[in-house]
Image (cartoon, rainbow, N blue to C red; front, side):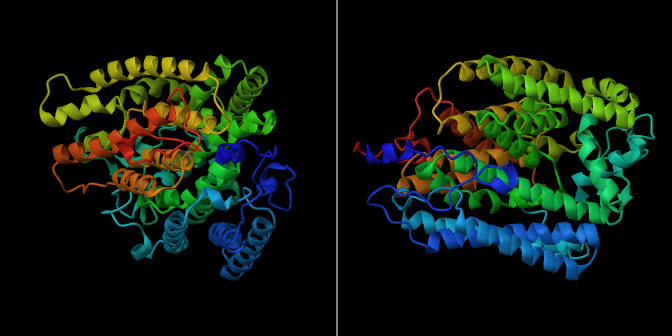
Length: 535
């Protein structure tokens, strides 16, 4: 019971980083009687964060100025400030009794791996000729170094105000003779231009950045820095919300998210998925603290950019969080209005025409490649995978039917979860599980779907003591989630292999949405978590 009391005596501190959220924080950690927090652990955490933000600052400064000297000065300055700040004001009041030596070792190794990967990736981001520093096709997302999701955002942002249809095939691809063959992407520098498939309001951010960095390579540097920083801030914010015990564990487990090749590969290609999930989680934390303007703005942008975070609006509605809901809906309308003023009605008309093909999957050129069909994590995509095995009727029409049935299930699950009373420790688990379930509604969801699931794994692990069985279960689940089958294999074999991480996703979501929370208690043995004896 002593551990339970420590978890629920969180001293009302509202935010992890007042530099980002404007909330005052104590300069000293508050430790329960009888626990000793070594000074080395807070110092190492502060140093690790300094290195990460220094890497992002270097990339951003290179993008804005093009000067390595200025970038080094900015990076050193940001790193020094972050180190000082988090040394004086730790993310959570670290509880030595909440962790173990094994957890510290795992956290340290994961941190070193993550930082080494970020340094290598930053080299490739700043200099695309250094392809040896990119995540190879046999790792990460399984894509060539020349693939860039970001290229679609950049081209769409530069074109949306002047072309009648920002979703037009010819903007991103050369004409195809065979409509079933893999598309021939247009080049932008050494990269292939990807196809743009998002709602028009998302382009507000890329259009703003394109004004500041009109060249694609510099735009790419700033986008990498923004993506990485938001992802790390999201991890810190949620760990802070959990309190000293679970928060300490979440903080130590969090490098496992960044150490994943899939996360690094997503930062490399600049895909939006990771940043949207982080924005939505930060937004929900702010709304829970009644910081309605900031939280509503972030959740509104996440919703109008990718649609699936809109399921959290249903969560707020069922919980009767009227002010949070009103701010978010109002700011959604405001963002759409600003976008209309900026680009006019043409991209919205094109989007409405394009939307049925998006929801049904026909709009995604990736489906022309069997390996992309096999790597798809989406629930509707399961119907199309059956085509690889010769099942009759496995078509885009079947995907649509499965998609709408799954949508109704999603809505019911969200209402069910929102009607329950959740503890402070369990609430972020529910938010993240809802986001993951909502993202699985997309017709096409490649391996970057795993990033929020890795995050959910670390949060679940933070709710129980870090025994050997717990750590082994986390390691086993982490390895299974990071399975990346080669694109050269038989697509049917790839589909079968992908079932392993999909199975882990289902298990983790079930654990996160269980009716009874397991505050520093037990988690079912299916993942190897221990059941401690009551105190």
